[in-house]
Length: 383
Image (cartoon, rainbow, N blue to C red):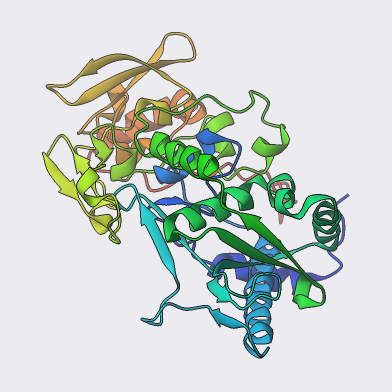
């Protein structure tokens, strides 16, 4: 027996929030997330392997964080002696970049006039967290303030080190608030050159990756995997989305001469022998072949560079081909179609695909939906 929804109107509002939300496509390795433990997750993200989606509860947390940051900024700016600059001279958010524009980040601000260090400029950040997390940071500050941030959040600590290193500042000031700004505490952190350089090396390894790093766990129920945006790709036999970054012919361009550029990072298509700007990277072209790691449920057994095709094997002796032209009856698929397929659909829909190839040879796969397991057709006959 199904449970009755106690708040149907609220549920409808939350559903609409999810439908209305469009995730911003980030064209770079994000300083704010580089401290994450799973390197494979960061490569998936950099390659645009799938569209990121968020639950309504997460979107509400984002909204709360933005409101709390604005409120906190107003409070600090209204305090005499504090020089808080949440925006750069051009009116935009402070931004940093490195590694030819492939590593980027955006600061909440710069601040001068702290009572703890009145003459020292600090990188300024605001974080909105749960009461439990705030109390934990408070205990760590009492124990050792300068070590508190790293123990409390390796992700925020790495972000702080990158922002200090890329702005050439030596101090970081984090204001930690509970929801709505009802409580505020702060923690100061010193620049750590070794950690900064290690973070740059980690970013470089993501940018230069030609294959996926190992999984952090083979168990899909492992806590990091369970809540990962890319869990279906990594553990559940799904295929990546088609774009230039998921293509076997593309690589990110690192050029020492453009290490500090403010522009977005450039990619290069080896097949067409040309550079790809941000907009071009999102399209993909008919020559697209998936990076083999992005079809995790199959193994490449033959690569034909001249004919631009890769043959894969799965489920024992089953095979299919990723190529330029569809021939569904022979299990030959363009990337535009293959992105919707998985081993289940290839095995169970073979007869359907063969029939479609015969009657509608120009057809394309737009999406595949699971069968409706809802109410059965068991209405009584009307006579």
